[in-house]
Amino acid sequence: MMIIIAEFFVVMLKVLWAIVTAGAKWVVRPKEKSVAGQVCVITGAGSGLGRLFAKEFARRRAILVLWDINSQSNEETAEMVRQIYHELDTPITKDGPVGGVEEVPPFQPQVYTYVCDVGKRESVYSTAEKVRREVGEVNILINNAGVVSGHHLLECPDELIERTMVVNCHAHFWTTKAFLPKMLELNHGHIVTVASSLGLFSTAGVEDYCASKFGAIGFHESLSHEVKASEKDGINMTLVCPYLVDTGMFKGCRIRKEIEPFLPPLKPEFCVKQAMRGILTDQPMICTPRIVYMVNFMKSILPFDAIVCMYRFLGADKCMYPFLAQRKEAMNNNEAKNGI
Image 1 (spheres, rainbow, N blue to C red):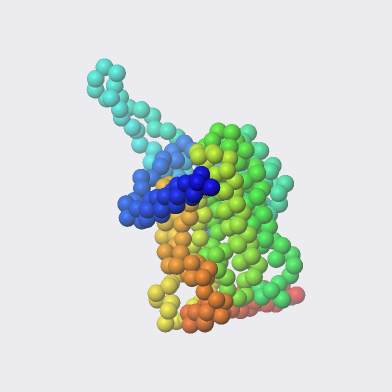
Image 2: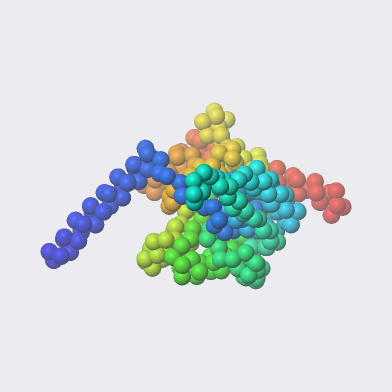
């Protein structure tokens, strides 16, 4: 019994130390690690946050492996990355062996593009094998690809529900199974899950999207525990949960107009810069803006009816309805043009 009590007090001290350490990181910004020369796979790199992640990693001289289902947009991202590499292509000087300085050719990172439908596990596994053969072992995996159906549940075709679940959640299983074994072998790697605040707390009208993001977060958290249990301290995990991002994915989504100035949609560039800060300092979770942490905590302790009252006050209960209406109108117009 005394051993259990002693262990309990040790655990409490460790918990308190973890809280103090986490709090200190909010005050004193930790030093960012270098990813130069690291092989980084980004899914959904052809647009939106994926493209911005690619540009940020390129500025830090990572070797980029871009995956997207759209070849043209993926190549456009690659061209932007090459331009960044070119701008960074300056000679480096160091002290010579007998005095003076000598010019050292700078490291030349490269970018590789692959057409991959992460919604198909065969495509994921075959593309991963190509990456290992043509580029090398992957050090950083950014699970970013995502889709939204844009339909009310009872109006949504089953195929779109399945597609949302497969791309936003199941694909994370397949990419992780493809690249994690070597990370474990080398005890080196970083897996990033780009989820959403809608994976922490939900709203009406996007049941499939919320379910897929809840699933992605559950997968990420369980995997984080598994990595810890394996005692592989060289593998890091980062969960990214942004509020509504102004990428056009949820165009038309609106909360109460009086509240909107205080909670506007996030600029994609700001969202990615905040995420990069978390990734490069090995932060386990990054929510943007920070009020998301508070909302998630309140959801955990308040009764459901209290949450509903808050949603109605904020206009968050039906915030997706204008977006859904726009998608439905756009689809109807498209069908009319095609004579359907």
